[in-house]
Length: 431
Image 1 (tube, rainbow, N blue to C red):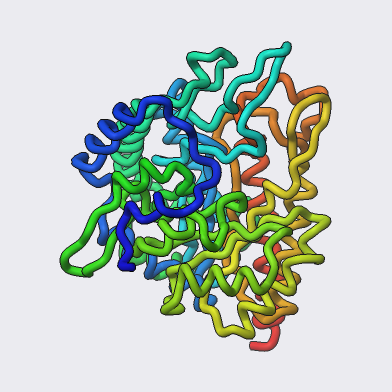
Image 2 (cartoon, helix red, strand yellow; image 1 turned 120 degrees about the vertical axis):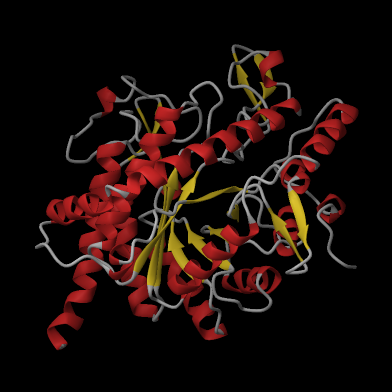
């Protein structure tokens, strides 16, 4: 059976909302199907080429942004702060690592969130769980929590504006790029060095977009056929990923991702066996094409050493050219003072384990995937401006998972840069 963007509907589908009005849903899907693509196929191809460099050990993927985008909190300044934060982090990593840093934001599409339960109960009232602004509202009342397909149209409009803003900020940042990179070296205590070749020739700032391909009604509607490549492409974002809760080999999400030509990320958690990982790789990347598949480990600092070595060993022995990265956020979520939070020390520990295990298994440690914001939130604990449990309620703004704030994200980038630099140090001595 040949693949089509609607084939996922014949498969079991996890984490999808139950829309009450099928006619209203079909109408929204039709409008999105005739709407302009959000990203261009040439841009997607450019990202795939850069990820291929990373898969070959010559680049590093920095992927990060909000846990989930919000309609109410959206604004030009919010987009700008995320853009600037990623730019600063990329400059710090570039100063210490081999090759370029490929910068991909969780933005312009990261509206939906998987949930551990379909409903939640408060004061004896049970309502559908909040699944992100593209599906329903966070307020705990029946109207807000009812899945509404019209929200997909609003998500599309906001994504379009976000992409336009990112393009404008990229053009503006180009003039400041050398200063940003010099500042990054100073922050790391690295002596001034000559500018990298890409700066000398004037390469523009490029930031790609990504999101979890969770709401398949939205993804299908924005899938386009390209005559030149003779392939289907998801035009909702440059890169899509499959979450740990939706990576069933025979499920709808894997089936959809298997048919589009974009780079695809695959979250790999503690329940994933080596055999199932190899089956997923064969399904998602049968041609073993560098830049096609990004494996995103998410185990937790105390679980990484137990699960990651076998998965990395299996991919190396199978000859897979997928890119290994790490999400040190999701496996390190704990509860403190009644709030979900994460400790920066645990996040750094999982990063360190990722590098050590990759070195031991002969695999390139190729990237990091973070939930973070440029806002001054108090959702995670630790860092150079230490936050205690008592600080959590002060600016705890997330509707889903706790995010690193700007200072914590830069602290983490500095630590990762030092890890990368230490790993390269033996080579510099040998030379």
